[in-house]
Length: 588
Image (cartoon, rainbow, N blue to C red):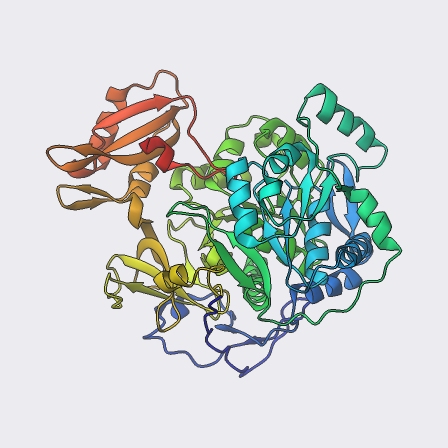
């Protein structure tokens, strides 16, 4: 395992109180070299340029402190049942003690394969408090994908929702997994849970038959653990907290090693950055986050679960955000304040009649990440909710947030914003040279949130880490004079038309603004004359929309070589479980 040395965090030059949170964050504002860091001149008023030394050494310490400080508050809510911080503390302690009783050594990998249900935060917190590493697994993985991740990580235990147990059954013999904990949708929902399990198992038939000899139910593990003692474990800042597997779009899926200090730094960075939102509207005494993005994804994990808990917030867990009517029905019950989401989710909600009737008076911050937010979607969201989407940017390898727009800004910028405190962005050419402002190159990121490397893949780590500590993102973009960075696309998605670069994001952003278009994706297809030409896949909002109409629209809005040569209408576009459009599937 190769670990990348991070730049030291600057010692504080001045201190200020920010938030009464579980982890008090000292903020500093040393003198800055404006020429080297053009983004600093665009920073929000009173925003520190660096984070202070971290208060906690491990994520488990941070979460335990939050649970003690906010013991009586609700921490997570799901399907009508809430879990207080005090209950989360007791349950995670019991589950951590049970895990330790299995003889797992410090640093052992424990996989969690669940959607957004109450068991997830209990299990995640328990694994970290017991001194182990969380391996987040997408519940919709095929047996092949699951086997790769379990084998690659060397996971010895797994916590899984019964709906997906048949997938594990197919591959467990080929892995090192010795301990299996199986959860059910209804088991933590009280009396209502009996009905929930009946409907899930018998009516909707969402639990295929499975057999995992020797498994333990989640509630049994909690009960057994309650009679055991959690042994103190010294977890260091450079121990691995999460093995966060990349989507595998550039090859085989790799585990990004996120050490405790990586994630704690990102929580500290985000906690500072979102304070800017309260310059416009006052911060409520008790924050409510909407948690529709899956917690196994790094965006929701850091922003919702970890920063949310650090702030003593309530997270409203949505197990299936694709069920938009069910999602909206749940939202009606809460006066929600912070709403992280993806472009596709914001778009789907804007097109739901019942969502448009909700009370948005409490909404202070809408955070867009995971994929480019399209201007047409951002404008509809603001018109509907009165709240603009603050777009940010990051990757699994950066814990995840590296840049974000100003939370107090009333406008959608179409950029990924400014580097967070203690973060530097460099735009570099193929030879690793820094490019002037305005020129397109690869976006490279340096900061305390950048991963320690890829698990057991020194070769892959060497490909993405530069000698001076920058992570090469694989995304192409440029920085403007004010320090805002604009992504034009991933290297591999670029369309080359007669030597001209065409970026699919640009095409999609333009076409999405046509009133007859619901969703759009652009790819390059081979052409004997120009090498490649753009092709669009469109989901219509207006069933009368024609190819000819769209071609004419593109002729008005795009220069010649950027115009699509082919347009294909689809009823839907292929997406990941998180909601990203899969261009590679459209390429066939």
